[in-house]
Length: 204
View 1: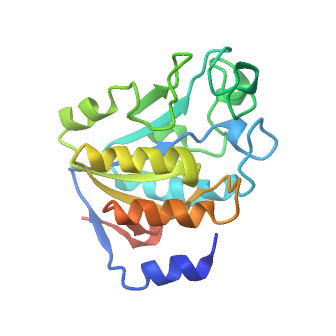
View 2 (view 1 turned 135 degrees about the vertical axis):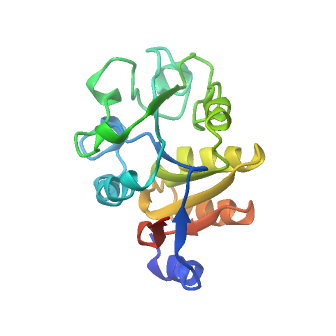
């Protein structure tokens, strides 16, 4: 991540008070997306310290996970761009042991159908309905990967009318192409997503 780029965005950041209408959405903190996994994010393990620190500040915490069938369309064997990953029920699909799973209120499975892309936590799920049922109007997004599932989840949330904050020290990117993370963060910012750090969050 380009620290100068992030610093320029965050330098005017004011503390954010977390209230009853806020929820944390942890995107795909799964073994296959971490070093040693099938589709690893090089710096993936660094997200867990900030995530575990902010979890207690939220009344409601969601965690999404890729929960793919063996013939998922995104897999190279089916003509997709990615190696097999996060196949439902396998160790690679499990949440990392570094994540404090006791704080999770709801797990949201995505990409469960062969032809469902599943990048976004809202794609083919009831996440939006569940958020609204609990009176949530703003979500704080963290997890993996910045340039794919975090980006897609944040942009979908904005299009559905939610306020969105992405915690930049609690996300990490695949960066298939140099600069993908910066471009993803800029796409989110232009869509009205607020960028912050975990240290900016205060409890009311």
